[in-house]
Length: 392
Image (cartoon, rainbow, N blue to C red; front, side, top):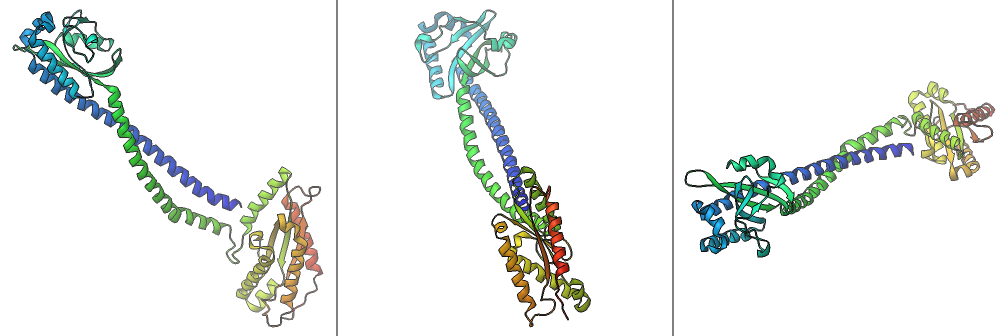
């Protein structure tokens, strides 16, 4: 039972390690994929902003910036440019705002700032205070320099803002064309991409997991289980060995300590092994031990029999077998009697086995070792009392 648990632990451990490893890889890929896609989207929007602001700059007469501010929508030219800006804004769903500001010490001076809602549109010449997100960039803006894109959350939303200087004929910055992209939309695109990657990667991981488990089952787990079986198997007889019994004994002692022990131990000893070895050779002696093991297993069951020494076997009876112990002992004696009475059998086939049984008694036994000692003493008394004689 313990060895089965150990075998299952190999499989469980490999499975958990594989799942954890693949999960870490999946999470890492998804996070990296999300960040890379978001970065790509931001960089793409920056390139798009350059194009949009370039188109706006082409529409604006840089010598008339102050005139645009003064006349505003009273000027037909102003209205035509504003309509072009609106068309550009509406052509790109990601664009929230498209506008032109003149930067002075007291703030942003609106040149063009159309809004979908006319009632909230900024009027030409209106002065808008500097955003806190741009505080460190105000000197550069006042100097007419390019600034890095800004990602910030303000009263207008979560935005990616790109300012592009517009130069007059003499190369002096007269205003800035600016674009605000919705970062929420960029995040939605990134998450959608991440979901697609996740589905694809989960399918790949599932295939890798199945392949890994098949590989580990065939090349690692089964060989380890086979090695584990060999470690607990008697090489000569093929039944459980002393190491296996030691584990069983530890389990029985645990049951005793827990107050739930109910078992019997049988000590079986093969008679005449030395005579068989001396008379017929060690090969026949080995055959004799195998037949002894098969005889014990045939009555008590292979799972319950252990070879703990050269000619010594231990049988562990629990549950129903414990209740059937008297019948099993009689059946065992009948098998031995039948083998002794078969003249056609070879000397090494007519096995003789002395057996003694002790049932765990909580009043007498503090450990499984005590029970085995009593079974061994009972076996020895029977061995001494046996009058079996063999002329072979």
